[in-house]
Every structure is written in structure tokens, then in C-alpha cells.
Amino acid sequence: MSTLPICIKRGSVSACPEAANPTTTQSREICGKTGRLAMIVAALLLWTYPASTQMVLSVALDGALACRDPAQYQTLFAEVGKAAYTKDLAAAVLAEQCTILRRGEDALVVDFFAEQKLVKIQRPGFRGTYWTSEHSLERHIGK
Image 1: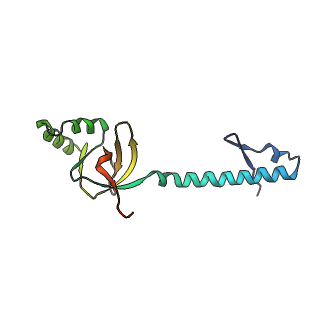
Image 2 (image 1 turned 120 degrees about the vertical axis):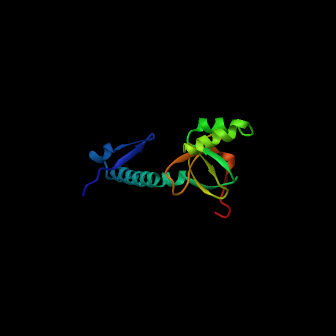
């Protein structure tokens, strides 16, 4: 089985011109080894990237609000303590646009909106994702 070695030059990966028409055995061996190493490193990065970007946290506050739309979360959060909050929250929960999280519940972090300090989470066993405040979550103790 014949493989075409690749070279990494200035941040790009390409076929080695030296391998197609080698002037010396040494240049072909160096190019081939670098290419195989680059392929192994790239494969490892692609294989581990999704796992390394997801983190499981716990809900820190009982009754924490989480909504499918970050704008709706911010609107409801701004109404906390006002008379309209209970009515609007009930309507959003019944429409399955928002949910109430329980303290200690696991939450898989799938995205982060740094400017608004919002975290997009998915609860294990559920398909939908929700936005909540980063202050509603904490690391698992002992994990």
C-alpha cells in the first residue's frame, strides 16, 4: 500500500513535493515522518475536541430559570419581583419555552454567551437546550 506523505509548512498541510521527486533519501524520510505525525495529531485533536469542550456542572440554585431563547431569559429575569413575573413565567413554562431547574441537577454545558454571562445547557436525558445564568451553575464537588 502506497501513501502520499504530507508536509506542514507555515501552518498549512500539503503534499510533499520532495516525496514525488526526491533529490535525497533523507528529505523524503523527513517529509514522510512529519506528514504521518501531523496526520496523527490532527486525528487526535478532531477525536477529542467535542469531549473537551463539554463540561457537566450542577445547578446551584433551587428554582433557577432557564429558557430556550436568551432574549426571553433576559426579559423574564428583568421581571423578577414584579407582578407580571409569575404570570409570564407560567405562560413560558406551559409553552415549553422555559423551565425551572432544581438544585443539584446535572447540566451539560454546550455553549457560552460571555457578553451576557449566559450558559447554554442540556439536561441529561432531555433533547432541548436552555439558556441560564452562569451564576445558576457550579462545578461538581469532588469531580
